[in-house]
Length: 163
Image 1: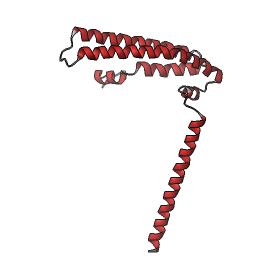
Image 2 (image 1 turned 135 degrees about the vertical axis):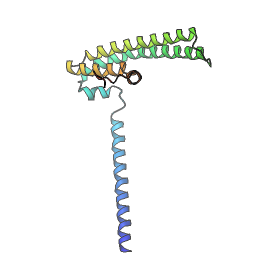
Image 3 (image 1 turned 45 degrees about the horizontal axis):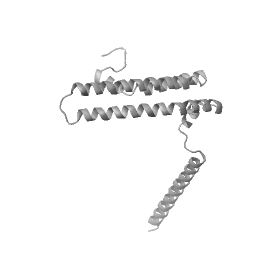
């Protein structure tokens, strides 16, 4: 009986310690979030160790780019809606549907070009090494969206030789 009581008291103590630790961690995280309001560019400052002056230039570029981005997203969404309407419940790919697919693809290509130009401009406001690293990552994210699917469907593993 004595052993059972020790195990019970130990389990309660351990549970209490876990609860208090979790509560303190949540409280600390909550305070940090309140002290540092949401900043969608904060990751950039942290990742690339940017100064306030560099961040101010990037914020200006970012704020100038956001309306262009929103406009392009709206155009793509509208064109996709047109495509979905043309496709309807049909079982064949009509010439009109193919034309809408081409229009969506053209808008996406235009969007990628605008994004890449924005990323190039941002990279040029950063110290050269950081700017290059940023640009490589943004190009990978922008151009690599379909890369995994394309590689898996083509059998291309990205290696120079196949066995």
